Length: 478
Ligand code: NAD
Image (cartoon, rainbow, N blue to C red; front, side, top):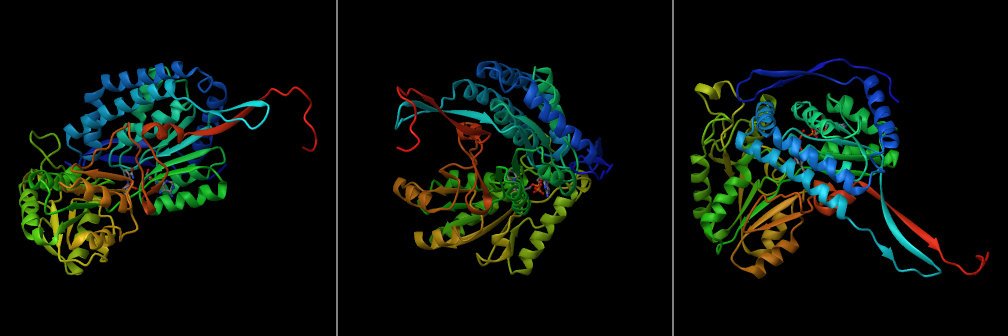
């Protein structure tokens, strides 16, 4: 238990207008102690973990229905909170609905193993929840990231304490409200608010937290893993990326160029799987790069609720400053800016945290620009000659989250896909991330897999059970 207290408010600012949306009270450290105590009590005594799986599934489905019924409200709220285009926000609410429905189905169909006996007993496994799960999420896709953790953690029978980012605090309380209305027992899902360095670090260090599930930056993930290591509690980490997007000369050029642009500029590049390093086969480098730059210049950067918007503002003004500094460093490292490289000016642009889609070339693959995550609309282009050169360069970062490969050769796609350090490989497509397929990173991009059936097992511990069938008493020595 920790005893200092802080009192403060978080202010949600609409990054499209600079105007205040809402104020949210932060959770003090003393209040956190109460939250954890209530979660522990609910886990042990609410009956949730003891419900038959199909009964838990029914509540999860009711949560999905509740989210769906409030889709427009939730999408608009997220748009105001983090500036993503309204159509994308609607898609994220749909994703959350799908996650609750999917984990309802997994919850009531998941089977465990009868294991081969080596004696007079029947042996099998059962899955048990951990207890109180701390779920910590970033600001880029709040409702989607929250649902990705909360749906399977609840399905497994855990109580969840959700801590959203201080930059996007508005969606998590709505999810908790909808879950409660849908029939989730009281305190099985609670929300704490505040800064990562204060309430976030107090939450992961709290003795009442039995498992930690984190999505966010690699440095934060490393700090959380240290605490989890000391406490010996399991931790799942979904971290950053610097994903390679690869175009071979034989690729379907029209589709490849469109996907490269969507892969980095969609969501203003604020996506962990953004394809931020573009590798183009040397002899088509100029022509492909030129097409990507032309597409980037045509992107409609506008207010997130404007018809036809492709890219809205960045999620906050301070994040835009970070992206601007990233581009300045690219310039200082000798990068040539082929388009973008500045905030747009005039009219509504002057009020919001907008930044133009930016393409940079001429940098060494080991430069900081090519190594570090911008988490913004900044693409670096790098030529390659042959598969060995490509694999060395593409694998030459600390990250390993995702990659895209554009080629008409099935065999080449297979070779390269197997050789790259990446948790997700997209061949002739990009950024397909669905609730039914495991997702996570190699290397510094994370530990563990969310989504899919593995995403439910993540929140369970395996218990092995033996039922003896012996005809005679067990001997002391065999
Ligand atoms: P962040 O690491 O700064 O913060 C993420 C969350 O952790 C926030 O809720 C924050 O308050 C909290 N936090 C910060 N310090 C903490 C601490 N010491 N202890 C406990 N909690 C703490 O990341 P961000 O800026 O919000 O998000 C951007 C990062 O998230 C990028 O690196 C991006 O790649 C990554 N991300 C990864 C995925 C994925 O699935 N792999 C998805 C989205 C975003």
